[in-house]
Length: 608
Image: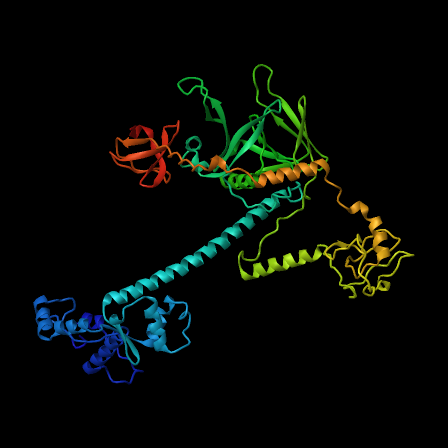
């Protein structure tokens, strides 16, 4: 192009000459050599056994494939016979060290490192997977596997072992993450109450569960809440009215509101008088102004509304509810909920009829030692009396060590040893042995312990009717002429360590310690014990009657096909027979089909 007479063409193709490069230009042979070396490098990344070049076309262009030409070359170069011979023998061959490196994870003995002979390690792996000896052979440096299925089995075992270890790691992480999340919730809940309210002794370290009424097994409540609504907290609480009378309510906290569900009797229809769940009140977060609590350890809480009457509730798990309410409130409105603490609270009551409404007062008094609140209503004032709890600056004890680990078990053993060392232990001193710790000083006039020595053996037999001191009877050592005093080391009394005069005198002083005679009550108890040992055989020795068979569950037949819309529903087809476990009033039954339990619509089935 540079030799062209057209200036425009010469400008399009300038002559790029690198003056600094003094090497010879690449030739065709060097290009072929470079490409061949690159091809060999790519092939050696695998384990090639037989390499043959096939010419795909005559045009020397890429992606131009002449199928007849390729088939002709494969047939006349003997590639088919080569592959058949390869398959008839041991197609897979691998050095011992590479085979061990890949499949060592299959056994505990070879993982993470095999310390013995490589050949023995390969044999151990083959034995662990129960591979037949006809399917593999061991050479001097390589292992040969015959069938591809055997190799696939090794790969499958390897994948399963990796999955097993992955599940172990996943389980440990989930356990750690859940514990850390519980600790974080405890800290956040403690910060809400820190320095403002006393805490209960057995609830400060409690883990939070959220659902305490079992919403999964109560479809009627789910219908009231909404199946798509996510429930953060649910508990049975007490709601107090204008006369301070308690009524049971199901408190349910969702992402947008607080629900109070009560029960009313059906007034009409075949189910007249049957209690059913009804929505008593729905408190949206936008309508809640603040929350009031006392500074004592009681469970009372007031939800104050902006333009409506308030709700005076008694919630056992108030700390967990307040924490979750604050989180949902902040996520919905972008600010934290206002919480006030005072021992004199006031709330608005519902307006009923002409001249209704007004306010009620609640006063809290710390008195006594009971953890249960004592209610004393008087007109429009309710007085709550409760004992003191833990200080308001109490913090939960967080578990820093991994539960179940060796370190935590060692810490637990040390804790037990330390606390067992604090318990009083009575050590019995042998005759003539020195005490293990210095004994306290004796009162004046008493005989020192060291002056009491064992008497010589008697030269004559003991006279009849002589009182005998048994060796197994243990009494605290008491000096003659003095009473018991705390801190003295107890000693085991034997016939050789007790003087006759001292034993008689001490026996007179210890008559009050002897067990009194049982009298008529003892005779009666003895007769009852004798009669209990000779009880007659139940049923007069007759064989036990067979147990009654369990009643068969009612069944129903599907009239139409139904596909489950939620996780707790059943999928069935027309004509399927379903066992009915429970018939609910809301139009949903609980049934079982093919071992799976769930909910099904009642209008899709017909009872058999």
